[in-house]
Image (cartoon, rainbow, N blue to C red; front, top):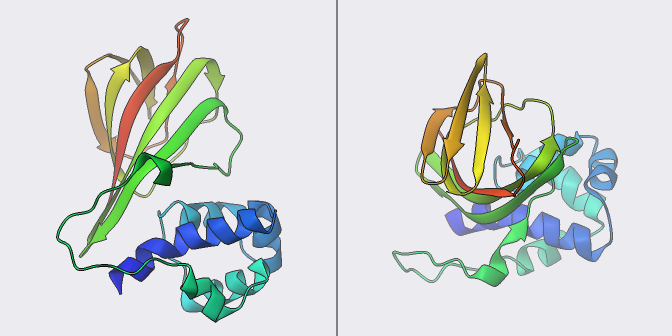
Length: 188
């Protein structure tokens, strides 16, 4: 059952893209927000059954076809994610110079987690955001200032930070080269 839950967001995204629909197209047709569709596709939330049924209808697919495309578990006690399975996360807000590459996500009992590779370009800009997760960031290359609430912290290569994502936050690259960081979201 858990394998189906993990695959729902990826399957919605796959069908949407195959049908050349935008997140906004599906959201309007399903009567939900584009932000909700984005969070579902990126494994940050699971839709309620009524919302799920509306989304499947908005995608223009049959329920049997929808579930046919979700991979079944094979009973292993480890998970491998291959590079070709990674995908760029389409954010629901305006952000210039930010690329989120989805690496891995899993729900384990009451704790879910997801990891992404975030690249922040010099002179990138966006408003502060909030997430329903605790966030761990590890700087791989470059440096970024991180605004968290009223505080600003400079993170350099090899530094890490952990914080409650419900506090408004944003990374700012004031340097001349892109910065990359590993981001792990913990959904509790």
